Image (cartoon, rainbow, N blue to C red; front, side, top):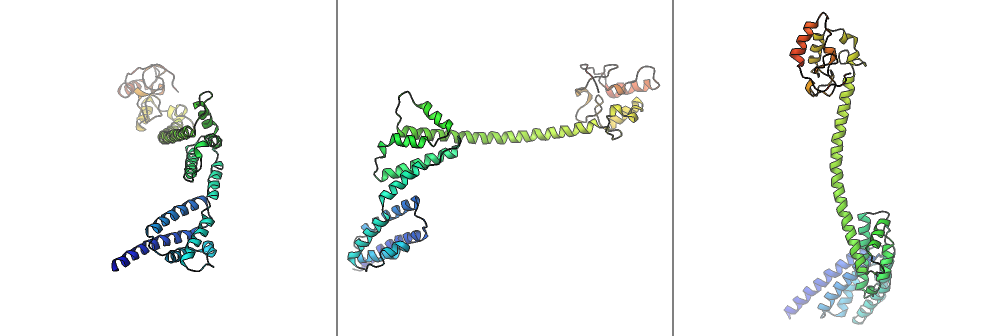
Length: 329
């Protein structure tokens, strides 16, 4: 006898725990949406399983647990009924008729299929919403014993109307002449397109990140280059807006002094403005007088007073390189 009582107490605790969880869920439910109805259906089936397993519990006990689990409108429906073994089945039938309305659930699923959001453009996220939505509602209708397998044409028409122009064209392109596709073929096509778009999106994001990094580096390089060019185009000898080639002060210096000033600034002896390369790598032209690798301003014509000094500077500092002949500033 003691063992039976212990077993019954365990069964009672299990059912009470299930009822408590259902009560907590129901109390937190606001509007009865499709998801809420589906969740309630699942909980009801689970509770029914425990109810049948512990069939030695009297109906009066079941009714007590059931009433304790109800609140709000559901509790009000059975408030006038007395606690008795007979009324348990009455209460259970009332609640099933009120909340276990399969017709409403079926219509809600069908309505949801027709109201799936239409795609605005070729997009993996929007296509996935359509794919997941139709799968969820069709499976729910199948579980409700509806003849979904004979609805292929209707389902394909309704759902394909939600596709963007590009995806709809791709779907039509897969069909052979006079072919009547099945809904499974359509579902497989949607899943395949969604997978391709998601993979492409990931690839594009990765490529975009690489491009942005490279673009940012190139932009910085261009900005730095532009900054150097602007700075170099200004006269570095007198810090004026004119170029050093037209600077009266610089032109008044001897060749040796000019070369000394250029070396002091660590500038290229060929273009007289860049610190990023040397004369042998300079893209500017050669001396217009002797065609060697130095600027014309660092070479004096024969017969000038400091011509000897100029030759020494050219030989020791500028070298005798003679690359292609092009114009200088």
